[in-house]
Length: 70
Image: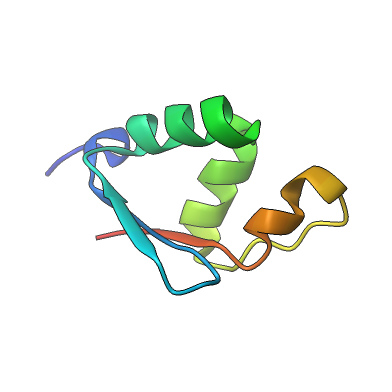
């Protein structure tokens, strides 16, 4: 049984584009570096399997993103 931070992660963007990561930690680092999204936000999206809803302007381009384990 692998640990949750080592599992592969799939990201679905609102425009239909999909992106996969080898681990949850690599996914977190990618979104922190490129979009400024916090660690807790990514972990919550993975845990709940819900789409991102945000009232902040800097996250509008990520509105509707889904992140889950594969």
